[in-house]
Image 1 (tube, helix red, strand yellow):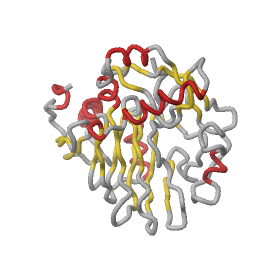
Image 2 (image 1 turned 120 degrees about the vertical axis):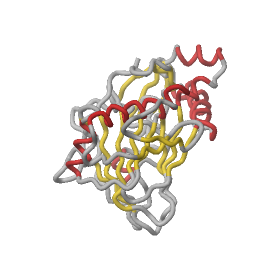
Image 3 (image 1 turned 60 degrees about the vertical axis):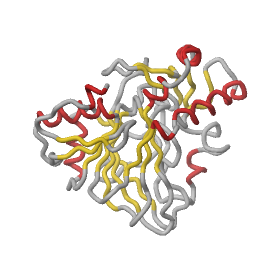
Length: 289
């Protein structure tokens, strides 16, 4: 992995922001990237798990074009996309909103049978301070477990929910957000929003094993909630230990691209009197194994 992190690039520059994961990428205009730069961006994503770009000026069409270079677009089954660009989720928090979107450790679309490969988040307006996002490296989380715990985790599967009382403190997603956010919740229709996944997944591109845990996990397959909860709580606390994490401070025009197959993230809600507006696109992934 150190070899990947130190790989030479011809079209981009990279600067790690923490010892665990995360790097800022320079030297590329995402509105019109060179094809070879796109290949290097993918390599940097695999090496650093989450990469950041500063001072970008992107229209929705340009952000979509960049995202499509890495795969098909995944539509959020519960949240309304933008009227003119349904593939883009506008994540908005106003001073009147009590809740923010993504304010707990999770990995995107874990409840789907084929969860999102990656997420691209572009900052349109940010608070004067606060609104940072935390990321955590799930390769390191798995590798730091004892051999016995690794064996146990490799034998378990998780049941992951996208909605309902089992996830939102006894409420549905709509009830949880009602009156507390300007973002709109929609009916997912017949889209599958409960799935079973391995607790330890193998990354399809790097071949590394990662702990695959997050806020969508309710219990282990063939186990009750009560039986599952002690180990889930331990693994959630373990997987977000400070030495596995990095923290990104946003500026208007910043863009983050993270790999949901080997990370979790957490949007910090610490700007009660200010506005934060982000444009999010998720890229389709495959079935975890």
